[in-house]
Length: 70
Image 1: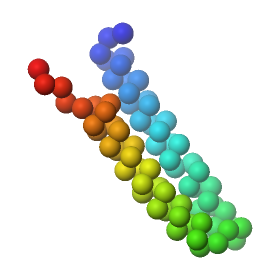
Image 2 (image 1 turned 90 degrees about the horizontal axis):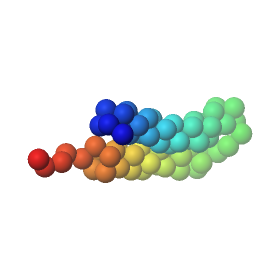
Image 3 (image 1 turned 120 degrees about the vertical axis):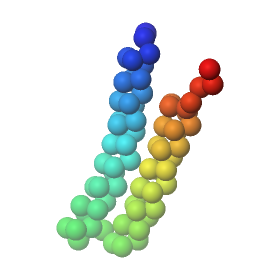
């Protein structure tokens, strides 16, 4: 597999991980606007979103796209 294909597969993986972070939290926020959940779940969802977003960023920067010494 050449480097360009591998790069785009990594980019696709980052997008999939980002969607896995956004979708469950967006569901909680949608339920909150409809009045089906309380503020505690919204606060925990926001904290979860921040934590998972940071983890995706860290994984992307330091594992997938780390600079290799040549």
